[in-house]
Image (tube, rainbow, N blue to C red):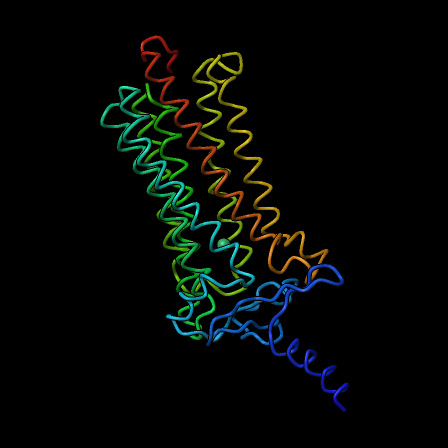
Length: 318
Ligand SMILES: [Zn+2]
């Protein structure tokens, strides 16, 4: 009898707590504060069911206060939340560094300060919208979930704007006409996308592909000013073109990989249940977005320094 009890007790404990399986033999207990528990895919409400390959580790049915508290627990959203929260602090820190060291050293004009501020502000807004969604998606109200999701998508549009503004400004630094044409076009396009994304009507699964297509088109549109800029600088042989085209290529390559993983749900599609907590496609997408923004910021610093060393009159302009 005693022997039986000692055998069943650990079993019972094992069932009531939540454990992450690491390999075949090791278990890692998850520390969950009172009031929060984790659910399997089958147990969560339908509005949270987005990715059947993530089988466990869901937070659900929580009031706002517990959503906030869940920032400090290990769930399948922890990496999503923290990757963009740290991303926010990265761009906030970069903003301070640029304003106090990079721009004063480059003898920056007032316009440079405005462009850098807009760019980094957009990146920070994008990061915070994403943190908000991943933190509050487990809210018990479906309406709250949808609102945060809309804000997350709108945040991506703002992040893309943050990439376009410095790119167009510095690429057409010496050609005010085209600079204004492209800036106005980009602004109009992003505003249209922003309002389309933030509208709750488009948040159903039916619009999933259309939303993805819109973001693809908005990103691909950047190729038009890029080709114009290459032509304007005298083609691929120009030193500035040779210096910047590989950077633009790397940016698009990272974007394409991030988008591909996001849409195809790789790797969890091939390893269902094995990357619930770390290594899922959405986490890769998050990390790649931070890397892309950082890469683009560094490219911006490079081209700012170039523009301040090369007066406009020496450049070929059309
Ligand atoms: Zn996300």
